[in-house]
Image (tube, rainbow, N blue to C red):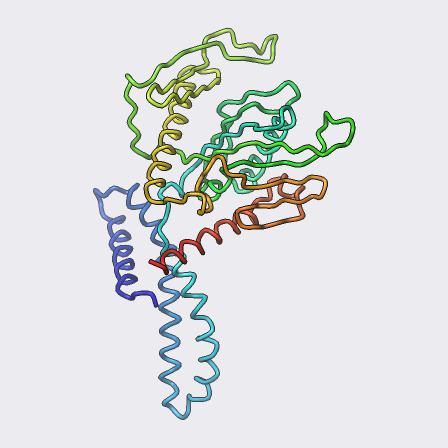
Length: 350
């Protein structure tokens, strides 16, 4: 049973924030953010309380001979709705990741497999671009190094939109592909891999970077040759000396490159801090879905069989073409549900 006093406190806080938003002099941005976080929770609480109220009324009707038959008809229906309403409310009350509502930065790199791994990294990039487009998010490639065969040696992408990190954070890890490479004349199936890291954007987080801790180098941006070669030193490389993190950006504007590179550096430092705190809280990171463990093999894409398997939740789908076309919702929804179930079980055991 969910404590009613806790629900009452949440509603009181929501009503206070709602009233404060209409008063002059308040921090509208902070209040608006808290309002948007509390509203779906309060809507779930009120729906649950309304159901309990209907149940209490129906039980009271049992004492009225004229209403008893109607009450006996309604009660089984209302009682059957209670477990689902309680579960939905418990999920709404689960602790939220502060980064979930924001944008994300995706980094994709080929792993084992040479040229085929680089080609697969490119396929993953297009998969995420299509998924972002379907959800109305904006994708911006920050830095990309292409291989000679048209694959990707490394790419960093900013995906901007509401709730991006909440859904894409489950993509962090090793993605394994099994297929016949375009370069294979004998028709043999090869296995290769690419790594994906999804970092929460750190623009709204206080990440202080001392000027003494970074080295900024400018260099000539690479191009495809001819008139496209950048003849000015506009590309920017920032090295964070304490951690050794190196970030580059190669847009046409040096000022914009500094801004982009600093955003990516902040995201990586923010992610390092999140991982450190997570390690302190949990002795067994790998037991948790979405832990962000970069070494974990999370998924296999088997092209000959048209099969995708997510190893964390033992989910297998036979519609690989649709997934590679950006249809990721079924997988991500299943991962979110599994993660929520684990959280609920942990809360129940506490």
